[in-house]
Image (cartoon, rainbow, N blue to C red; front, side):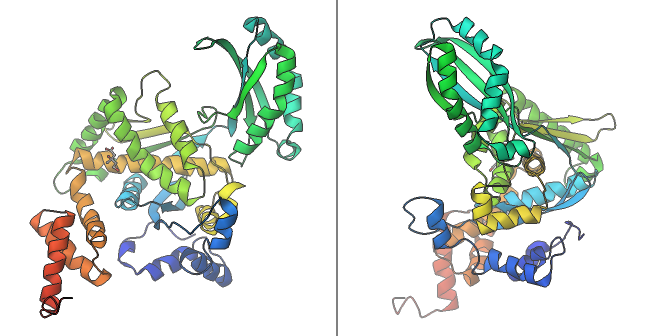
Length: 441
Ligand code: MEV
């Protein structure tokens, strides 16, 4: 297996990078060529396929796909495809993964792929005895749920548990909500769980004498958690301007604020989601579901707080942990339909949805480390500026061969803004082609 530790990757041409990535995992020449065609050639998502995916299709909307390097997860070198529009995210994840590599890489773990389906029961005369009846019929209801999807049951998944909650103080009075816990194995599971909830509804109405309302999965997937841990030796955090000790302390101090203050926690978690979402999108998973689950989980104590934690061990090394819901699949959905998403899963080398969930959480932790390290040292803007300046230059119409000059001049003068980019671009064009403005070009 080739190492994911590559220095100077960003200096290679795009074609060289794609060809190198296509060789990841040692495929045959034919497979590698096909991968290049999917990444940068004609075999990515096309209009015909897109037209089958959603309604009223009128075109395609692309996103840059990059790879984060340097990741070691549970002793395995991993190449991480990330689809994201924000500059610095992929560089940040790769940089942080390099630091974590010095401490042996990420360790990860996850729970089973259990999703919760909710069935709302209204107009129940006696909610507590209705709850009792439902719980007494647990086996029958689980069996009924399993009959909906014999394939997943045959593979070892299926209904695991039934919980019945009484919600007394709702705006329309007391109601019941039944939670069906269902192990979705390698599927994200929304369709299966929704189908099961709909199938159980009539029997639940019969048993309770009530009326079933909603029948839908919950995105607060707190039975489907993935977690990652990393250790960074304090010396690995040394920079030209800051001692590792200072950086480690700064990171823990930054986290301390996020652990108590929702205003900071929202931004802290946004940094985590920069990494998480980029892999979720690259692999064709439902990033809205992941976002909803993450933020609901962050608020589960009653106060919204940080998803990750940072502390020091007794040798002073920096230790990071992140645990969050991660309802992703590797079968079904866009993962199988979108050629690039399928390739992203293949490149990750994951064999199960749980393994994918664990990689994603490791990337979230890396992204959090990159952000906190920058915030605790030089600030976020310095590293951001050059990449941001590139986007600003492109946005005002600089051609590829003009971008570097516009960027350099904006950085040198310390103003990265569209008005300056426009003025500098005009000036640059006059210098390169002095007569052009007189000819009205
Ligand atoms: C920017 O996309 C993300 C950060 O704001 C995250 C953070 O503040 O931790 C840098």
